[in-house]
Length: 454
Image (cartoon, helix red, strand yellow):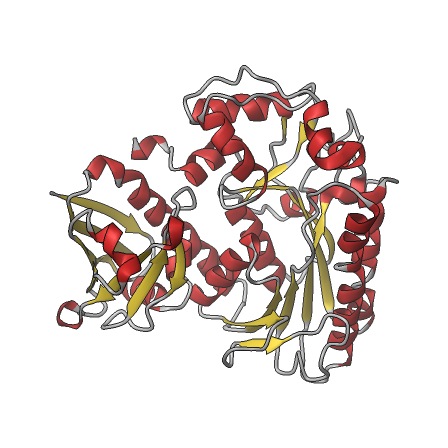
């Protein structure tokens, strides 16, 4: 038994093959709805070995076969047994994945994935549709950046191991950039530097072209005094010290991009459409975000182009609200939160990555940028769309008391039940292209339920 899937991407053969050879390709191609993560990427498509992690500590080692390596036309990997943790997956039978590439024209490439396996092809169709769509969209984004003048750069990233950071770093390295992860533990290798948020080393940003600052303690949680202090202290002080260091570094970044949040507008803005010029709110999160954004001022004062990415509710089954709601809706236990009338401003994970990418190369982007899809929905619309994508009902609403039991009254009000209709006006004025402006398209892609894969 086997499956063959083919697609054509609008990029030259050598460019497509080179993308697969770079670090990050495995992260970008792994479907987010599958219980699988990349533990180690192959150092070479010729004879390297990748290792995927499965639930329960199981491992899926994939050995690349030198005899079948024919750049830029072909590489082959095969699941092997390498240790006790890889034995149970091997019981499913053979898995040999043949990747073939052929030029359709000077500017397009046909990709053919052939898998020799006992797994029914119907179970794999969504996986390969996802992979090819990711590749097409990523190559298109990198081409647009090159045309806008972005050259291979050295980019320092904090929060690189988080949901957004993992995918952003993978996207950047497959595009030919060097990513230096700023980590709080001892650095491991030349692409990591140890970062002390309270006292960053004077040479931390030497030779860096841009900084993308994502780090911060999770906001979700009961809004106790301790939790609120952690949320604030993990953002404001470290951001200011990093911005001050960027300003002092002689051969250092010319761009400083910091994460931010639409929480700056306050939780209760019914009937308003909030662009970047909207007034801030007066609740806890609004105050934190204002101070967080203000902390980037030292970089801006030093003539470093500074951008604050005000992020909406990120959609990915790897984390956030979708990770929580997906199993409930899959079990038929989903429904709207609270009244369902509140506006919900969301963004696809890959669209968020594109916003950070654009902030690297678009010299006109400065200050706050709303990173939200152009089509916000109500809570009821979100529940109905998720249910329809999963072919489940949405009949069990969660009253406001539900989130309050988990987050406390203040946390539920500012997070789960916030009413914010946010417009990405700065991006819209620049004709920014969103990969998935429709919530249904976003959820179908992220959950492997695209109609083309059915």
